[in-house]
Image 1: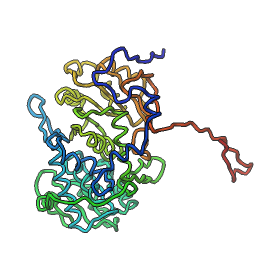
Image 2: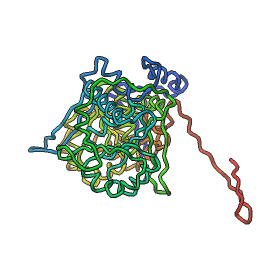
Image 3: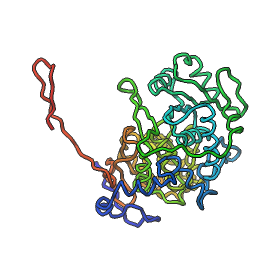
Image 4: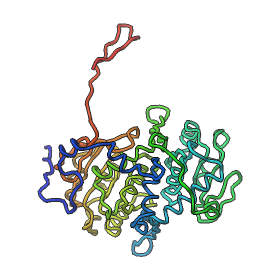
Length: 421
């Protein structure tokens, strides 16, 4: 028997940004969003400037931008490292200078292959500041998927760890003719001395904290994401700096980010969700992001939600089903009084998972939809409105969604086909 819709009976604790759907759609303007964001002194548009530079010069420079959670110690407490917006600016400037010293400039391709360590995030943002096109890779990829993407993207620089390099890249290095520089991060914290590579931490320590941003426009390429490759050779989706408008608007309407939020996106930056909403969107809104460096563990995740006072949580249906499978006893040991909004993406969210959130966490799970090609959320369930479990929601302001039916007519020989819509 189908379960009914989830009806909003009480007002949200924080007033949502999107309350009057029709009015928001009628009054929305992409040009206005772009003009409010692309406000660099030189008149250009750069994602890293909007995400980092402008905050480092503002009143929130001492606010934590990223909190990296490490291994759990006695009693379950986790080691952490906080990076403020001001520190993030200085680190990304250092990385910008590292690239420039290597002769890497605007339009060159930088690939990043690592777990969720600080150096990954710094490399992405520092590369964008430099006008370099950044392409994050999933650290669980094997050698061939890595080689395919670097070849297709004509990568000149790779940032990775010493262990990942030795396991996955060293043996295929001669198959990557465009790859000139490999910057390594020692996973044990020590300096690396592997032949044919450079020690990133040493280069960062030697680099200046002052670096002017490379002039870029809204039409300049910023990110190169690849599809999963399940239907053939991975396809590269090119995104521009002007996409910052989508990152901002969707963080505002779909994730309902407010300046004081503590936000946790569980997606790996090797996939588009982990870049768009694990790095860019929360920084644009000046919030604090939780970054968990460990693998999935149900009890650890509940502890993070509680101990880090997470307010907005963005995760995946697979992870939600893993939490469901772990049982309802574990979450009963924890409390989530600050948690006000949960969203999910990556595959269809089954109705049972939506209701599970309501019953176990006290909040329904809000499904949404988008693609690698769009770079940002297109359709979503948002916090002010009722939810029909099993539905991905409604198009966000500025987005029109249509269903197109193609009626294929083919000749008897099957050689010529045409479509009528």
